[in-house]
Length: 255
Image (tube, rainbow, N blue to C red; front, side, top):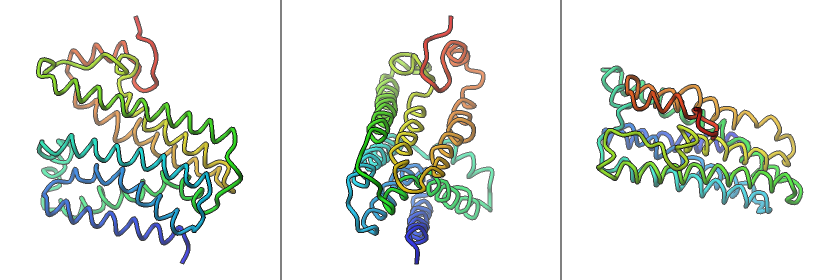
């Protein structure tokens, strides 16, 4: 059985476990915790299955592990003291008696398919290896590091802002949020483009740009920015923030 098919089966089992857990806990937002962990699991399984422990393989394993564990822990800590995320609550009500079936396919199976597409650059590195580390790998690490900074620092700034009760009803417009309305989303996308640059040295890996393209499309046009900003429709503070601040790429304020 091929390397890539076995990893797909591992991911299928992984997503089914989290679906079962969601039924037990009666909250579908555990899927958000599973997201980062799924990348870590596939990356390590790919490394162990390849039987090769070359520098590039170790590098991408470390980078994905740092990203995935930090993200999963951040989401778990954020959600653990609250009820189910409003997005999932809305779907629970809208789907009615079809909730279990639609949750399985539209949340967990779909998420697994998207996860597999995004992680393809890493899997190519794990299976095919490549030459010794070079300049392109350094550029990839620097791009990844920029993304990690924006995502981790952006998340921390938002967490601290929300914890301060005097900020209730206000909009975070300082720190990284001064330059982009979504520094954490910009960071997540940027990290995956950095991973792809590292993967380019693996034979035949160019086409795996489908990975960073998928996460970019999802965050910018589907489930990231559009869904989040829809929740602020009619909020005059946020609308003023929209007029002056870049939606995605960090940039200076508009006058």
